[in-house]
Image (tube, rainbow, N blue to C red):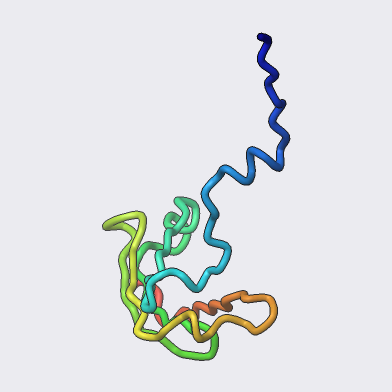
Length: 103
């Protein structure tokens, strides 16, 4: 007997894939902010900065970093960023306030 193979449709393939997390609220309660300074900015302004961050409406910091030492700095957050997601769009607003350059 001849066997009949069913052609898989895009819907069949999608149904077999594991579900992806679509909610951004599944991450850690207290995440971290990573900042990277581009080479052009480093040359123009130097690498040492002091700044604060507003996550939603909550101020974090002040933080200090020197990008001349390393390209990427990570700063832990003290607030539950999931509670600060914008209702409806689920966006998270971040505002970086530069306090001091070249400490």
